[in-house]
Length: 189
Image (tube, rainbow, N blue to C red; front, top):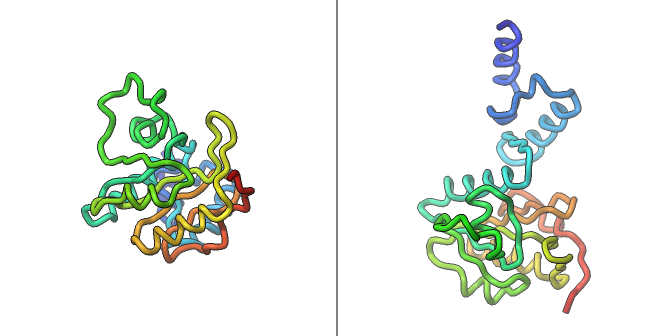
């Protein structure tokens, strides 16, 4: 019981997620949480166990703070995870089989096509979820300027963009992070 009480006291003093028991983690994790909390956003950090869990958190945050907007634009060929929301966000029909009806609030548009993104946007669109390099069915790399153009589009439309998975810090929410964090990629067309 003393350990749990100590954990509760320790957790209340740290800037980490309430769901992540930081007092039971190694000190490098605690240092990472502290660095992230001090550097980004409002000092809150969420550490997840998987990409699906991270994507679920991003979906929830976008909807929670979307002022009534709820729709997430995703792209064909994408893979976002195996939870019901992330399967719905995944732009591949084979992952949808057996899980119908899928969750409402996701619209899929062609990858590497900014005009399609613009056509897919509605008044209820709250954000965009894109893999900068798609890994399912081969390695699909967009044109060099695509991610920057998506970032600019999101700024104009006031839609947050969750862009990640290349091993670089490119989550680029408006007003929070540098636009120069998009990964370097080679053109495919």
